[in-house]
Length: 224
Image (cartoon, one colour):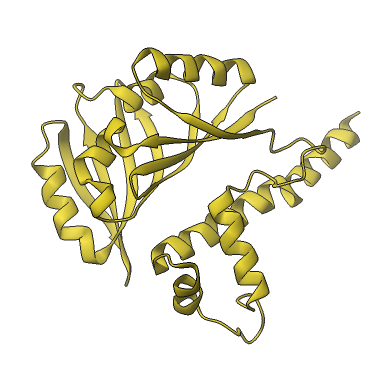
């Protein structure tokens, strides 16, 4: 059975975190990592106030072959970066594994990753490979999102859980809303972008782990 693992790693041990100096700079939401041949192409969101500086830093990096602005909204910009074959470390491990990166977020001096592995043995192999490369991942959570016995968090990360509960308690989901996104983010001391992303991704994870998984179990039962 597949498992989802959440772990943190120091920004200095992750090429994107080190390059963009997350500790004193922008808050970054990694959208996805898609293996393409021997390279890894990340898509990530950055607040518009940091977009120009991020673009310059990436264009000047020796590890970057191409930088493209894919999309933008009123508050954030979506980048696509093609890394060259010199990039290693965590990106190299993601490139060489069958794991799927669900999300990653640069906050302060650390990056938080959530990855899906086909089985626990694959997670163990990935973790050991990180240690061998001198990385120090802090494994915070492991769960099986489609297990009916695992309903404590439904695979939602702790930051997502905090935002979703606050949004529920403060009336963000009410009609009409009792609090807007800006005020909700201020109450939690995070950016509008982070609040929006956590709500969207948290809701996606909840629906996948509840309604979608129940439908899957019903279909499996019908086939028996």
